[in-house]
Figure (cartoon, rainbow, N blue to C red):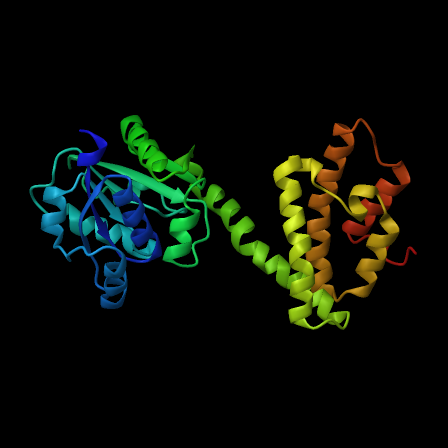
Length: 301
């Protein structure tokens, strides 16, 4: 079966499903139609692709691929409804895009002539236009029910302009937690920094404007220098006095988070020193460890 004859259907017409349909059609695949309960999302989908609403029966009879791009909590139920249909096209692959659920949640009946695949884009999609524009170069976490299904997944990712990343379904929650930390909790970390600026008398809008270039610079350094090379600042230098003043000046609820992040920074700092064939002075390392482990060193000036 050549790529330009592959037919696919979509269940769920949100940002991910719509953007995948747009890009796969551009790559030469054919979207035969969609199945969705949301009139608003379907109307929005049709602004990009004028595809018809289809019943599940037609989807399973005619599709080579079926994308289940619903919310995570609805994926298993959607697969269960598909499993009840007769005349499923042999060799069909059902695909979900969840980062936390394994592909196996779609397997409701092991005798069905179906493969199961998870393609999770490691990207934050604010809207359809953004999703389409940033898909190229995006990594996709891939795992499936067989090596052949995973190979098909790799081909799809490359058609989308993405980069396949093989993941272990048994450890998928850890993989997804890592993605959440860098995507969602980074936003929370910016809020933490903004709160510190606000306590220093700087308005939120000014704080955010001032911090964004610093954040962008750190991201560039990570991309260019990697870990631990991108680490800078007082812990990288071994400057315990600065860390002590930070801890003295901030409220306890922020101090706790600062310490935990500082421990990770110290882990990187030790690795960086080793990398540079250098070391912390023993007294500096001891002071940093005591400060970050809340052993009463905040009074050090």
